[in-house]
Length: 248
Image 1 (spheres, rainbow, N blue to C red):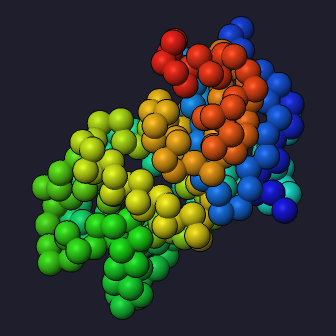
Image 2 (image 1 turned 120 degrees about the vertical axis):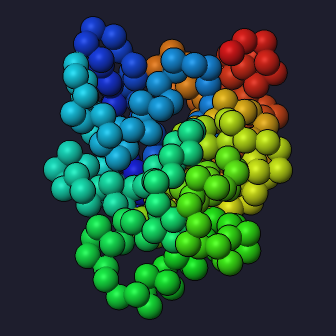
Image 3 (image 1 turned 45 degrees about the vertical axis):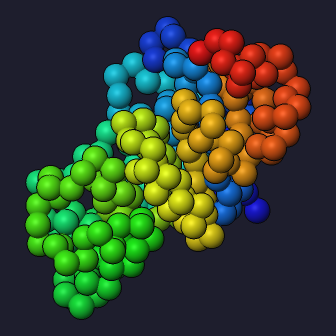
């Protein structure tokens, strides 16, 4: 069974076509890396998967996106966004404590049991490889964390509501190599329990963590394959040129 079934997906912003006739399957418990130069439609695809684009001015969608076999446009928006979490390029902690940042989502969904809240916070922080660094200062402001720690906190906040899918949009673009390695380590562990879609401009990162890699160019899916094959014997010359840094 596929997690996402995408058929003939075309996205328009006014008269501009951002994605053109995308056909793509995303499987459970894989990391799908999506690469391509700017303005290729990568982030637009991510936001389509959890319906963040729906209410934007001039947005129009054609084609089909199914999540677990059901048309996402026929599903409750709140349910979709709970099941399909998203981590953005810029860490956006809430002006709250570390603990309250992580538990924010479950509390909004009605969880009041303090013991259960503590269990969820510990689990989510361990899954995001942050627990050992913050376990003794959970009451401190999240703004006291470093940039890399704030990004892992945002991952923990996403995990706390127990989604099925995590969408990462350039999660390491502003991080140092050590913080990047910790985020990547977390991703590799998380795929045991979650489906992960990673948009990255760092082709080396795509190669390190992706089970499969998709190459987008000017709104089109040029090719998709296992990451090993994509980075050694791509079928399309444009893919090879991009991976080798000849453009982008």
